[in-house]
Structures are given as structure tokens and as C-alpha cells.
Image (cartoon, rainbow, N blue to C red; front, side, top):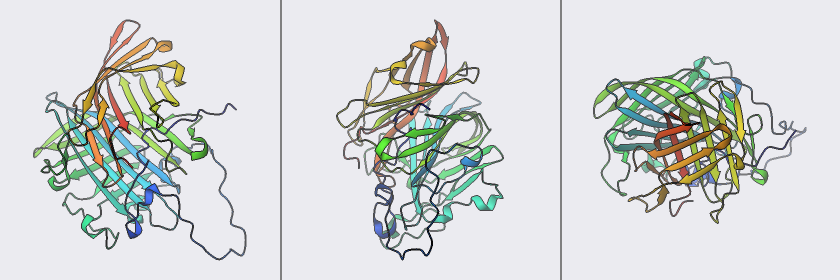
Length: 409
């Protein structure tokens, strides 16, 4: 069997992640703690070596691994043509004898209103995972994250019944092939994209979405991504899940429909490399789905490059570095952090006869999540125009950019 390429995970937001755990230490950024204990009377059975086959729907559920996340981005349209992008993600981390640590990010892009809003939460303890209450059979997940009271974290990591903002728990679940997202961010926990640190809170917003099942796409070698000395990760996506529900903004409940891209990744890894990465998720109107990851070393070079393209007929092809090119066509400077981000790209895949041009729908889609994950990153929806063999194709896309903001962990 050919050894898989050593690629970075797509969405490795846990590089330097600093969710506060026991005694206020940055649990997710540290190696697992080894606690001394008496030798067992008999040998403890070891886990099978990685990689193992990815088995769905079984592997939709949580795993006892160092790092794991369930990650949604998507594109929603209202009856009047108003368009929204959204991000909803939950991270889970195990670190030795410490309680399980969680973080969540929620974001909404109002494309017509040129507005980007986001909120973040963290929580410590097993109570976030309510999968067992759904009657699932091992192929489901259900989370409810209320959030810790930041003012109480120094004294105790115990969670409070509800967010101190009063926004209510954020829930994420998958049952019988249907994913349900429900999260409401109160004004006191909302940040406006592009606002300087310490600016007034933004307007409250919420999402309530039901996502239909879609075929899963395994990345790397049958769903296994090899990071070399840093470990490895299991990784798959559902790139095109039909979405329907409601976005609430400015006190108005807006019925919406559209699509979502789901990523699930887990493994015994903490951080890989040191320069950041650019991640692209593109849905074209001819039902081509494309994901690319360009990973930078500390010197700015790109030692790891990886992609997957799904054809209109559902065929899956993995792309090596020489199979595509990505050129930057513009930049945006954050007034909050001073970071200079790429803001516009031209992608070419000669073997598919495909050229894709991306431009952010809103410039200020930066998230400063140092309070929960220790990083600042840019993640946002895109205007898409594509050409395949001289035929024009529309579409939707999300781009994630990390490693550009100064002072990241």
C-alpha cells in the first residue's frame, strides 16, 4: 500500500489551543499529563495501532482521542434573496487525567448587509456530551454547550447552568442521518467582525438548522492523514448537506435554505508544524466539490499541500501538490489585530479543465478566539466564479486562514 502524503488537517484550530482547564492551565495546548499510579496486577490491553478503517455511521460519534472536532460551514438563502454564511464548530480534547475540555465557535456572515458576527464559548467536563440521552447506537452524537462563567474560571472550572450572557445552550446533534444545529448568541457575547478590541458588543443572532444526510468523502489514504512525528488524524467530510431552517438577526426570524459542509476529524495529535495554513472548500453548481489545504512552514514555504475533488458523478480523486495551483489576488488588513490576510484567489486544476476565482463576500470575517482556543483566524464565505473548458459555472465557497495574526500561540 502506498504511504499517504504527510498533510496537515483541514481546520487544525487546535494548534496552540488554550481552552482553560484545571487550575487555569492551557489544557489543549499541552502534552497529555502522565499521572503516577501503582502498576496493574495484569497487563492492560493496548489499543490497535493506527490507522484503523473509518466505519460510518459508527465513527460519527465521539472518540477517546487527544483531539476531535465537528465542524460546519455553509451558505443560506432567504426568500427575498438575502444570503448568509455560517460557521458552527465544537472542539473536544482529552489531556491525561484532566476533565474533557470543550470549545465552540459560532459565526454568521450577512452578505448583503456587509456584516460579520461571531461568538465563542468553552466548557470543562463530560456533561457537554449528551449523546447517551438520545438512544443512539454508536453512530450518533449530541452536544449541549452552555459555557463557563469566565469570572469564575480562576477559582473553579465548574460549568454554570447557562451561559452568563443568557444565550442558552448551543446544541449540535446527528440522529438517523439528520444533523441539527441550534445556537443563540446574546449581545453580550457577540463580537462584530472588524471592530477593534474592547468595542461594544454586537447584535444578538442565532441559527436553527436541519441538515439532510449526504455521502461522506474520505481524505488522505482511506480517511487517514499521516503527520509523521506529530501523529496522525482520521478525517472525512460531507461536502453537500441540504440545509433548511431559520436565521435570527436584528430581532427578525428569517426562514432560509441552502447547503452545509461538514468536517469531522479526530486523532492523537495536538499540533503540527508552525506556519499556518490556507483551507478552501468549494461547491460548484455542476455538483463538483473541491477542498484544498496549503500548509506553511515557519519560513513561509509550503511543504505540505493536499486536496480532494469530487466530480459531478460522485467520483473522488485525491490531488497532490503538482495537480493544482493557487494564486493570491488581493489582501485585507484587520483593524483589530493588524494581521494582513490574503483576500482573493485564483485556483487552477488543469487535469479537470477547471479554473476557480474566489473573493470574500465580506472583508472582515476574522475571529479573535484567543479567549477559548488561543488563536486568531479568518474564516468566511466567498463569491465564486468558475470556468470548466470555457463554460461558466457558479458556486459557493468557504476559506479558512490561520497563522497570519501576530502573537498567536
